[in-house]
Length: 356
Image (cartoon, rainbow, N blue to C red; front, top):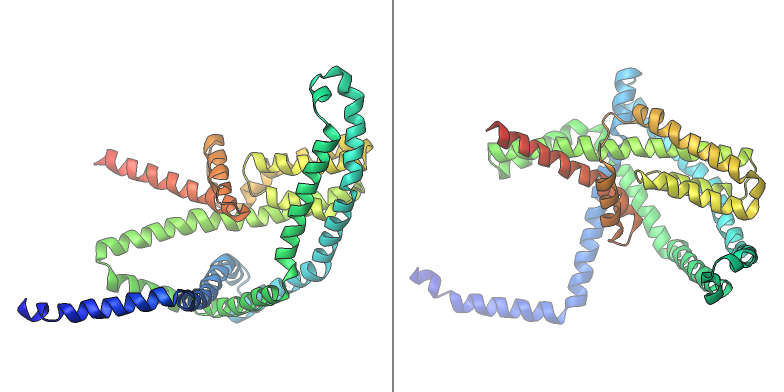
């Protein structure tokens, strides 16, 4: 103890110098950690991509009896082809729809204002509210937000180049993770077994398996399901010759991730645009898209999911609201399987306690 005490003044000095250095170089240190975390994130994204594509690899190896090299070549070749089609055909069409839609918003507001004035005498509310001004202000707010999103997403060439380059590196790393997945899985188990005792290691394996089953299983199935529904919705909109079909198909695809209320929001967006652009087809659009969502709920989801989340309406809405409070749509999607995982762990623990 006496030997340690004589080093205490030196420890205080080193701590003080370190603290002073950190305070006076916060920017440089945060920048260093930012670069470090950015590099680590590339590996994390590579692992996520490999886990997401692993079911396709297993299917190819087991069902098609192809070698791993051929399976990986087919999977990534198909992925590159799809991304190329989206990048060179889908994105320009989507952006063109956005540009045309935003320029037409003032005309749609004028139409809505004329319609509202026809019914104003029946509702005293409209006598006190300048609907045209309210709608104009709302449209300016929406358009400014759309412009802000587009500028942030596509305006900075440097950020876009960095994102693309990081994504490409992560994708390349995911090939290595998939090709040697048994090695990395074994390495992970060895690391866990080194730092945790057998009991805690078993718990980590168990919760990891459950997390993969609930979280990634749902995300993988829902992505396939939403792509199919978005594509079929796009075909329906093309058949009825509804303008801005690409934009509306993306809306159907994205909202389909959200249980219960999501599909209704997608239908409402399509109905609103159809109301302004092709009112005579509005009823047929509603009927067709509702039929599409019923097909999804009663048939397609059962084919895409190995295990459903079984979240009732209350917890589904709670997950959406809680995820939305973080201010980014991706959190809504992530919170849905997270709530399902917490629910499963709760009932599992409850069963264990009752069994004891």
